[in-house]
Image 1 (cartoon, rainbow, N blue to C red):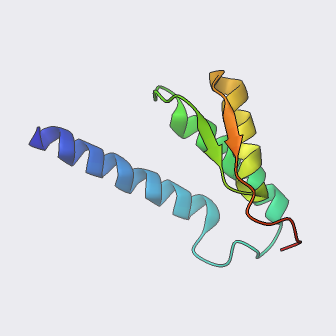
Image 2: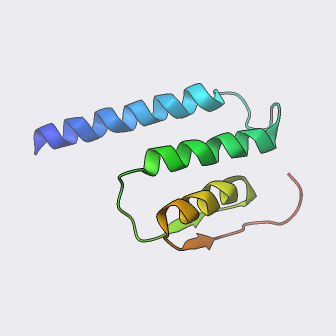
Length: 88
């Protein structure tokens, strides 16, 4: 069981490092935000390969594209929870 925990922790750390490398540590609003959303969608689909889940949950317009892409890839339903509709 400890080996599984260590493997899971290493996987999470590697995933976090990939996200930081792809998107940096600055403001998400720096540069082309729509391009960042597309890159995030690609990364989410790649990271989800081989994972088992029942549904996809996206919180807002910035994560919706990733949720939609993953829903198409996996055949799982997407639930979108939009917090606000004003412009960021």
